[in-house]
Length: 93
Image (cartoon, rainbow, N blue to C red; front, side, top):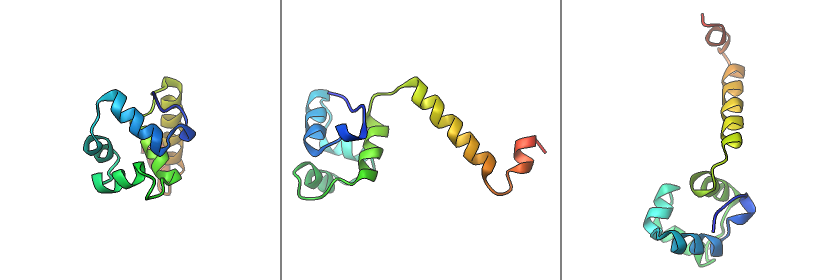
């Protein structure tokens, strides 16, 4: 079981993933900055799993694709260049 897309991240798939990988709730949820208590509630369906948290889980625990990582790096670099005051940084001044 792996997370390849955001739609792969569901309460049931999280539990299955943890069990298959031998990861405790504390380890899994701490990696995405969520308490074990809240993570337990998400896995049981009591608390909603938001799209933002799905994305964080995918980024943290999902399959790593080199091309995706490179694209994200390029986007981050472009955003840095577009940030206010970036003109001097971009040209090396």
